[in-house]
Amino acid sequence: MENLQEKAKEILNNNWKGSFSIPCANLYPFQWKWDSGFIAIGLAHFNMQNAEKEIETLLDAQWDNGFIPHIIFHTENDSYFPGANFHRSELHPLSSKKYKSTGMTQPPVTGFVLEDMYKISKDKSQTLQYLKTVIDKVYFNHEYFYNNRDPKNEGLVYIYHNWESGTDNSPIWDDIWATMNPPEYTFERRDTTHVDASERPSKREYDHYLHIIEIAKANNYSDEKIAELSPFLVQDPLFNAMLIKSNESLINLYEEIGGNADKIDQLKKWQEQSIKSFKDKLFDDELGAYIHYDLRNEKPLRHLTSSSFSPLFANIPSQERADKMVKVMLEKFGGEHQYLCASFDPDSDRFNPKKYWRGPVWVNLNWMLFYGLKNYGYNDVSERVKQDTISIVEKNGFYEYFDSRKEMHTNGKAGYGGGDFSWSAALLLDMLN
Ligand code: 2M8
Image (cartoon, rainbow, N blue to C red):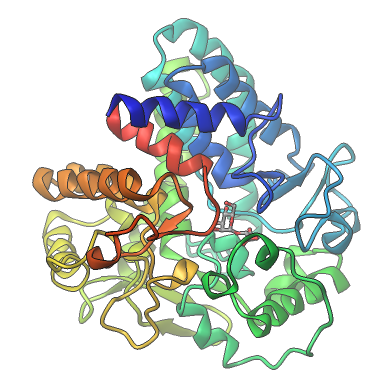
């Protein structure tokens, strides 16, 4: 175990670029929003200064409307497509003047990351001083979400692009692609020069990804226009669970800091409505877990994914529902030949255990399940998630994602995507501490 921890630290040190971290070399050469959060948790265990700087840099790229972009292009680098010149964040009148970025966001993990950093800190008063300098920016980001991403005032925010979900090519999005017919664009992919194409999304999927951005750009990334026109408009349980978890953390931290009664009050109001709508709208009784909702076409997207169980991490379900969810997780995803937890329903014909978010196991989702299961007293299942995560990393290395089928892990080639991947290192380190 000590070796694993040392290796994890080495990866984080190598992926540290002076004021932020990259997810991994070559494939992802910039700073990504939710990666940054997970990485900061790992860094906090051995280098609090870098953890603080990581988040500080991310928040420095915040727009004047509170929005935090999903990629911050700190350097000119053409090893990634689509880069800054494609995304053109400058089209939005309130975008950062200092950093080029995308015009989309990613799951709002930063709030609970700050609380985790505080919990991990050995010098609480120093960390509290730091938190005072950044927390309002995260609050402002939540304000952005509730004011701009919730057109019907439900307490549930939408995402307008699959890249905002973080679960890029999940088979859930196939249902949305079936409602669209984008042009065949000509472009040069870079991801498939770093990673085998069989482990990445298809060209046709990229056409869809680019098309949604073209629509957003044609409207200068206006939230109002996107809500009106984007063919992709989804309430995602993972994204909303992260927001709810982060709201809770902001409340806890503001209480620790003292004062800020108005903000605590507002956060509690958001919480109340968000949790209620989440429970009422996103739970699928028949499937026994939470699902996505297609706001554009007004219909539930009835599939089981690892995101379906992420509300456990945010303490959203009742104990009764949690019991049901864990039963489904074990029955469908936890057979004796499977590592927990595949990213997509292994019984579905859309399941592909090698292809990115269409089936492989991801360390960040496992990390959420590890803590989420503990919240509900499922200590054995939680321990199994941890041991499964350790096994796949020990056998293959700190890959981006892993085959969920145990039989594939015999020759060390069941780790896929990028290698020496930052959040795999950071979150395993956290689980081992
Ligand atoms: C993956 O996504 C990027 C686009 O954001 C890509 O494929 O180019 C996803 O796994 C995403 O969740 C992650 O944040 C990013 C960097 O690790 O890679």
